[in-house]
Amino acid sequence: MTVEIDHLFLFIEPEGPEIEALQRSGLTETYRRSHPGQGTANVCFAFDNLYLELLWLTSEAEARSPGISRTGLWERSQWARSGACPLGVAVRGDMAAAGLPTWDYRPPYLPEGMSIPVACAGDDRTLPMVFVSPGNQQPADWPAARRGALQRSAGFGKIFVVDLGLPASAAKAPSLNALASTVPGLNFSPRPDRGHHLRLALADPAGHHAHTLDLASTTTGHWRIELIDEYLTARSWQRAWAALGLRAPDGLMKRLLDAWAEPQRRYHSTQHLHECLALLEPVLDLAEHPGEVELALWFHDAVYDPQGQGNEARSADWACEALAQAGAGAEVQQRVRALIMATCHDAESVGDDARLLVDIDLAILGADPARFAEYDAQVREEYRWVPEPVYRGKRREVLAGFLARPVIYGTQRFRERFEGRARENLRNSD
Image 1 (cartoon, rainbow, N blue to C red):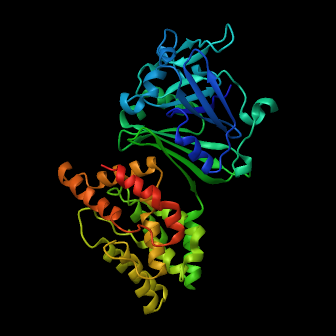
Image 2 (tube, helix red, strand yellow):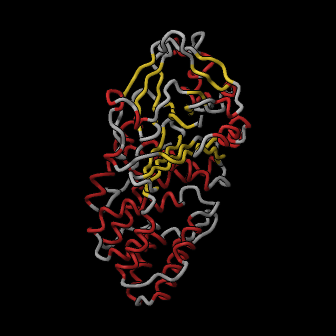
Image 3 (cartoon, one colour):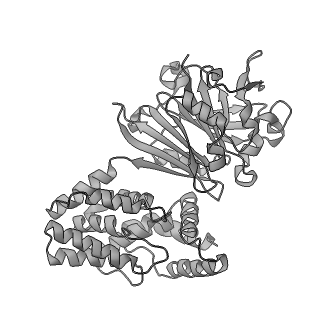
């Protein structure tokens, strides 16, 4: 029998903000359940072939009781403090095919005589909990009374690749390598930090990889959740040059994406570029010269050296060189240069296009707390060569400068959406 992923779990705080974040991404809650005697409850989001379970603790006493404690659910629920892995992988099929020894778990909520084979490797709490699901059907085949809502209404069918990002020592565990070699579409990847990451490649109903659901742990004990449109960068690139009435120089998009993916970047990365492009797309009507604003976003951090100076000027030079090569006039080049230089954030933005672009660049200040915490940690990592007391002093100075402004956002749409949250994040930042 083929071994397949049945579901994935990750621990959150009780009724945590991750539930709402998934719903804002367009996903529909399929069902909720509690687990009497185990001390947990969940909410599940089912796709055609597997489901994502957000799990939380309801009773410490039950989770730490005899018969339950070996699962490590208590330690996993306290992952932000305990260092345990908050993730689990449930499979359908015979886990013996992966050569993994198991023990029989008999939680009180299961019918008499039933048990769940759990991989003994999970006794190491730094590894995900791996077990055989009591169910043997994919969600699309569940009886109608149980099935509830799948994600077809949001345009999603199957999850066809699951990538679990783990600390390097855990990702290299022999038991996980054995499991990945047995279960199609399951990968374990080392993370550069000690965090945890879950990336789900989502197919549209026609089977094409259209989106990636990205969930990353943060230092606040919550998960940053992002739905990534896999077609966004290509769509944006084509739209920007079409609006300019020009043809992009050959190979330029790849050179830019390679630059955004350079290893010294943690915040000023392809993640930031993607977030900026996603924010621009629905507000392009605010731009006087939409093609110039979109291209300026592509280039605004194209050159980034945390230990260097003049990154914005060098990025602007690159943009102007590319525009000149494509045949753009001097006025277009000058406007794009001015837009990129506006992201220095050292003066009030002048003009609607500059205000829009700067608002997009600063939207991270008004992100959900989990994403803001991740951003704060990413910036610190980019400046890891700066001593902590010096860094914290400079960082407080920069953030206090934004907080002292009469308004952070220059456009009404961004002010209405981000101003309040940005001020809350800045006040709470240390």
